[in-house]
Length: 387
Ligand SMILES: *Cc1c(COP(=O)(O)O)cnc(C)c1O
Image (cartoon, rainbow, N blue to C red; front, side, top):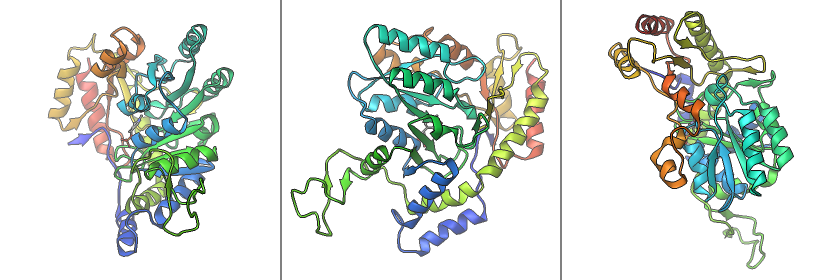
């Protein structure tokens, strides 16, 4: 069965993990620092703090930015649950802004309207989490402009977009956002099994997330109440978690990041074939690659006008599965989840572009090890069954 996404591991990854097993540390050893250094140099951030998942990265970012009750945090309805859930974890109130119908990222005009309407009712938006959906960066320069104007913090949930470019720059994410969060889940660009990271140029934020990833423990005592010199000594000032990642995983991460550029190039090559195969076809819309950005294709979101096709979306999924292709849909708009409807009163019709997108979207297989013959098998099957 061919799935929409899959990790790419080889002999060099096995060797990297074996080296850790032969050493002294399995968790919190030298490879954690090493992977953090690799991330800092690839993404050009002052600091990188690796954690147990992308979700943990979002959770700690919200705490570090001081979110709490009465704070409003905005994100896109077209994202993984974890983005919105991280707002709820901190006790803040989530709200959404609809997506743009070409980039599938947050709509800038609607974002400005939303900010202004909160402003008029004397409510302050604490932060915006922009999601670089599928590997297409948001219009970060414009978001930064609004954030500065209205004193709003910015997180880039960059889980889909490692290696994407905005205005020609691969390290755009940390250039515009206060915090960048990443995930190394097996379907993402590089993997550590489970894993994530928090990139920032703000050393105070980095210090906070480091403290929180390990129970809130600090070794160099701040309060001076007890003997800070004692080698066993630690203090806890803030409630933290065990969100650490292991040395085993970080060794894998360091080896994977060496291959990131080649992984992205493979994804771009596959996308080019799909673009060529689908671009002239009625009922199909291929993902856009504007002048501003270079897509990194974590996903290949193909939009199908199922209102007009003979097969319904469910029937089409069944036919593809019967032929060994497991498609996916990214995503069911978060505001339509029962939890968000019940707790915050969202409803169908609130974010219409996102809802229309959901009706049409299919994520077709794209990952570095996808065979060329399978790429054509998939595109031929789609062309045969979408009419
Ligand atoms: C994968 C993903 C996450 C969560 O990452 P995990 O490592 O699975 O916890 C968050 N946001 C987005 C957009 C993602 O794709």
